[in-house]
Amino acid sequence: MNDEIIRDKEEIKPSKSFIEQFIIEDLKAGENNGAITTRFPPEPNGYLHIGHAKAICLNFGMALKYGGKCNLRFDDTNPIKEDVEYVDSIKEDIHWLGFDWKDREYYASDYFSNLFNFAVELIQKGLAYVDDQPADLISAQKGTPSQPGTESPYRDRMADLNIELFGRMNKGEFEEGSRVLRAKIDMTSPNMHMRDPIIYRIIKSPHHRTGTKWNVYPMYDFAHGQSDYFEGVTHSLCTLEFEVHRPLYDWFIDQLKTNDYRPRQIEFNRLNLTYTMMSKRKLLELVQEGKVRGWDDPRMPTLCGLRRRGYTPESIKRFVDLIGYTKVEAINDVSLLEHAVREDLNLRTPRVFGVLNPLKVIIKNYPEGKVEDVELINNPEDETMGKRLIPFSREVYIEQDDFMELPPHKFFRLAPGMEVRLKGAYIIKCEGFKKNASTGAIEEVYCTYDPETRSGGNISEKKVKGTLHWVSAQHAVDAEVRLYDRLFNHEDPAGSKCEDYRTLLNSDSLKVLTGCKVEPSLGSAKPLDKFQFQRLGYFCVDYDSTPEKLVFNRTVQLKDTWSKINK
Ligand code: ATP
Ligand code: MG
Image 1 (tube, rainbow, N blue to C red):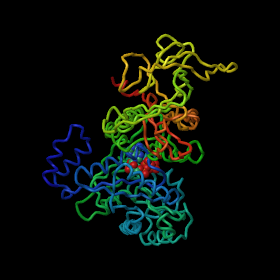
Image 2: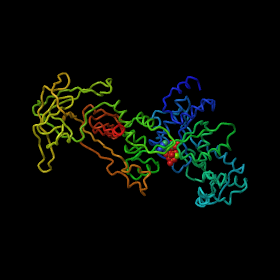
Image 3: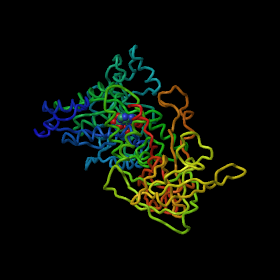
Image 4: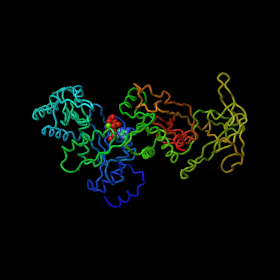
């Protein structure tokens, strides 16, 4: 650790988390010769979600800030649930967030031999034994937090026999569930995890990396801490539920370590979001049952879903920064996440015109066949984004709800006899409309324009209260727009006592609008391109989009409930 980096750290804003302070303490104390090694340890049994982003930002962020390393380690100890599809998606998502593990891509399965040998060593020391009882009996004997457990009748089996049985378990001689290997610790410990935990079980499904080499697989608790140890991880940052596992991890490391080194485990609170479910198992069910269109459905809290929805890595990292790391379980308001993406997209997206529910306006005194290019600023927040020209002509589309036949007081949009400005172009006045006799729907609106009122070079002094977005009818490009609402109606679907979380799903979470009209400059937009549709929100081009038919996802509306709450 050089002085310069330490000095830099001391100037860091007061927002340093308790974890960062521990890391600084350790650096100052010269622990691990000044090395910092963290890791992000996903189990490849699902796609990453926004909660994982919190762990990723912390592990990679601390390593980057303090000149350390962060490993990517797949905790792949359960062949039944794991798949290379998940491995690939996890790597893609971490890269998308902007982090890189270089050549340090590790797998718990790389350590299966070391773990197996360590288990044998524990048996030899009399610290592990094969239990022939079925799982339900073992779990019944565990007792309760206030009552000690009961020792297994196999607990004092001789080491030689245990070694022989463990070897035969691994050769595939016994059925799944017929035997397990347990650590011999303390059946009376107040910590239930210390009551002779199972450390190996028989599984006969092939593993996505080791194939059929093994018939016994380590439990997560037996693999996780030791994998950190094998990799020289200095700071094992994990979520609060692992706090009670720490004594067990320490116990294993005590048996394993050969010098003073041991990973320092520090726990922090999980990210939970309102109106959101974060359990990978339940997200998988939503996908499998077709409740959503896939892992990357824009309503999902997965990173690929958020990406498709139009979220940027910067907005997710900013959100994670805002919520911080504490020791208290909490549920964060999803509107804060929306606030973060709005702030980011405000700076980076060009403003464009898109009409979601078109209503045709015919400007009767505008010459037929005439087209004028009007100039518009791409982003008032960023001059360097320049200007663009969009065509104006006799027939334009406006939003249906920007016109009312019988407007209430203070309706500053279009209505019979009223004037509005078409943004960047002219002031028009409504002279009449056509109504469908049977449905009552307004089909066309007739206006006149005042040629003296064109925006730009010849700006007229005339002022009107309303300004509308619009697109020229003959130049407009057709689009489908998908509007999203929360996936769940319940503020805390995971915490609700509801028996079936599916009943909490919001049946109106997706609304598809076809027949939308967008300005011609969007004709060449590519998937994941992002825009602000003026007055409507931020939108992102979907993967389903083609040059013939553009498809947009609405990322978020313009209205910011979060900054309102905090005013
Ligand atoms: P599982 O129930 O499958 O274990 P998991 O969400 O814990 O689900 P992992 O793949 O084990 O999934 O998670 C990888 C890492 O991400 C772990 O270190 C875990 O602590 C962290 N993590 C998972 N969910 C969250 C969350 N909601 N907030 C913060 N960190 C999380
Ligand atoms: Mg986990």
